[in-house]
Length: 244
Length: 219
Image (cartoon, each protein chain N blue to C red):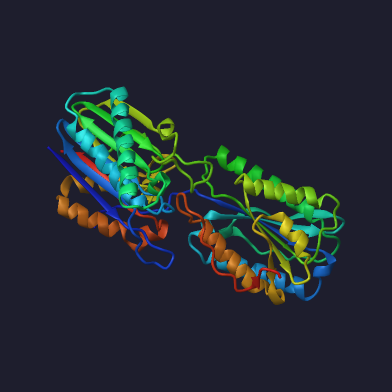
């Protein structure tokens, strides 16, 4: 028995008006487990929102079709092929709709978490974060944001050498709870490269007891609160699975 | 409502910002008075900004005296910044000041990296009323432009109406701005708003600066 969900809310402009949400978050059942994907379209990329949606959906579809247990090499190959496929789709889209856009116009980051049987996998490009917890809300594994020299620089699927910056790992654990988030959420979910326990513990406890509707409503309220938008005006996304 | 959940800004992000101030004799009188008032306003504005007060780090340098570069305020978080009193006497070793500023910025970035503190691209504001009196200013100007090209810093040269803009323009690829009527008050309000915006710049975005009401591009 498990609970899956995702919420994505738009950030605010400097005039405190909602932006066009460039994040995309999804958490779905697969043929042998469940997967959570978050992609954050670059604010400066005109079609970043399309890029994040296309990449997320292509990756989750690929994972949903996956039937056999895989190791980290075949997992990273699957992610590589899915991202390359999404880039082809985006190039075709650009031609078809005469957008006259380079692939960098669709720049987006990627965080993927996948549980299949007793195996867990994570693939991560750029910022955002992914955390796996046990039932006592203790951290099992974490994938941290990766930025360039400056905090406002990161890695995108549209970079020529994007695969060189893709970080993948696996571990064995048949019962995990997972939080995947975009960089709009990490400022209050992480502290010194570790989960901020006053955020993650109450969140996991709440997700165990809440229905999907209750969770969606409460997390949307929290992410759009004045406090949250005061900390980060960026788009904010959270995806999760809880094993009950 | 999620019981017991705490939202706290856990980012340790910093925007390092050097303000290089001309404290030469020619600044004496109204210019230095207005500059000092402007610095007090900078202190107030930054402290009133919840995000900028924690993310912006300032280093204030003064050029003047016998070709001296003096640290008026060593690196400090904006929340702890206390406006210094700048005196006007001596020469304008602008080249030397810029060299010190660039070196200080690189040292500070090194400290951030050692302490795993994330940071934005540093900013350097150069504020003067004249022209350099030191011999090697041209090399310093080249270094500033080179550093800009390499993405190491963003340089904002600002001169009063008496400044030599042909020279000041050489310190940045973006060119210098002329401060009208010694309106340091408005300049420092803008500077505070700009660093506030800069400290909150999102991924892969350029900082959108507020419109300039205190000056113009010199003709």
